[in-house]
Length: 309
Image (cartoon, rainbow, N blue to C red; front, side):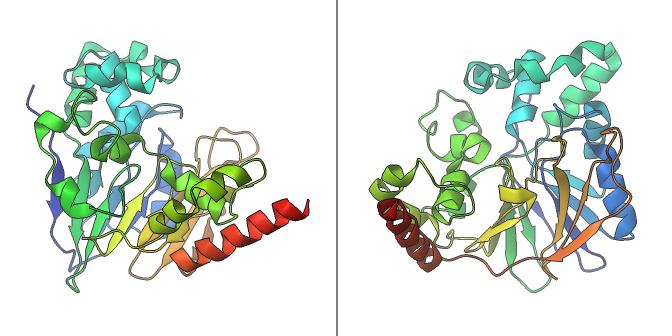
């Protein structure tokens, strides 16, 4: 099979709007509800996904079919890799022991041979990252999980197909972070967005590292990612990064859609029967991004509170 693409570049959308969605996990009806709410026009608008289209949710096959739509673009997530590994597709099989998600891939057993071939073709075509040029000349990067502040986006552009395996020298570094990194959660804990109790000693030992992580990611104007479910199921902005996985497959989770040019976002959750999305769509405005200084102040407060206890 042909080597998977690394970075796919999208030209500016001069005619319509670009909407970015969090981890979908087979919840295609939630996406349809949001698209209807924003009056999505497939002839001009685009939907751009941070990956994890499949597994866990109700309709992974329909989610994978979105990849064939001319208005839909997505990056490779850890659940896509696991799906391809379970379907015995190289080089993704090399990742299977590192990801351990077999319990979520029972939907593969229900596929016909034709459906299985289509799923393999769709998922294996996904790039590691997307580079979306904007009409004003700025660039938005999209990955599934994490990218270190330095060396940043230029280093991701330099990744080769040979380095897209867990046995390459990039493991534990660039490629692994982009697919599976969870540093976002530790940074949110340092900001007090997650419950820091029990982590105070770790925060104290890594305070400088956490402050560095809250600086701007180099080489890109805005970096959008998912993978780590955000606190309170709300999008989180830190420096020039935006995290939008809001746990749609969970009973209280939501699917988030963001329009970066207006800093608006929309969310829809589950009805009480957990079988269909709510009719009501929540609309919000992204908060100002947290900075390294915000992290520094938050860490001081967390440690002072811990000492007071």
